[in-house]
Length: 414
Length: 87
Image: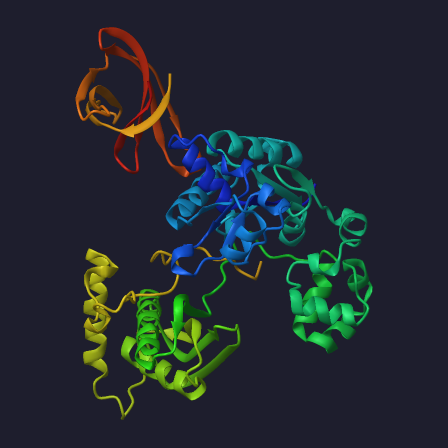
């Protein structure tokens, strides 16, 4: 037998974890058995459904819709706020269990992991038996259910775990691709998003099998390298290692604001709060950035983005914020904003930088940034903040989730 | 036994290997009065980590208002908190 990879995917992760935690703490209601959702705080007007229970799904509640829309479909809906520190603990506990089976475990997102099972067959037996033991063990020890997908590579293992849920083990070996994967709708293929699906359907490609049967050069002419990748994936071809390290290409933070932002000072303050978080992470990463971009969404969901290349790489909060503010004013005409973000990319190491004739204050600014980072590192992010945030209701550091910089967001690359 | 899951002030002693043993705890009544219940015997000790949250569960026996009763104490390791789970 050749290579074997598992993909482990927690069923309704946020909801399951929330439910198990509550049961552990004496609650008699299992959220999973009732119409329930995990979402933001409805009082603050920035709530969307992050996760839903199966009974809620049956009533038509969808992930991503507002809490108000969800409640209209299910009047007795139970709503709970997310607790990201709990989710990280659950994810960590699952990772610990998986590590008993193999040293090669890759966290793909907060609720998905890959495991290289190839070397473990001699210890734990045939893959399907081991996957079922693993599934049962997680259910018994940690209290929540998972789906396990098994195949020769990560892509197919991930596709397999998406078959019938919950609490199941599925295989999608390469030899099974024609009868298990090719009949599926094209939108089910990993990396095919809504827009690509529309484009493919317009060209008469309805199933993964039809995509696999295309000439790869045709797909390349339509979509470039992405098209080649899609063809490979449609044919079940993917060969990355479990645990492969992907370099950080950029660091960004964004926030959905609980009120419509129309005031210039408020918008600039929010950008400053986002820039503080981004710059803190950038310095912690040991990098400087050459490119900064600002993006936002208005109250009617229209998006915009603007970017700028620095003359020399920077990691200074003030410089990132100043440029972000200028970018915002280039494109924003005062329409109400509900979502804003700052992102830096084109990263280089910060152990040397090119001096510019125009930047005499550089060393002082760097020293200030480092001093602030040290204080925050020792006493917490809230220990030191700029006075312009006092009595404004705006958090001095914004973006991300509960200040946990290590929260593993979903990656798009295997 | 009824599930109540209430945080309680607890006296315990710790062995050299880090194992905790509850000695007695104070239970606040609904009328504001509190009673101290002594743990006469630890009948069972198990660990669980549901939701990735490690807990130690003690099945105990002690005298409550003149009667020997069973109850369950839980120690939440991360929060360093004792709970009276069931009595």
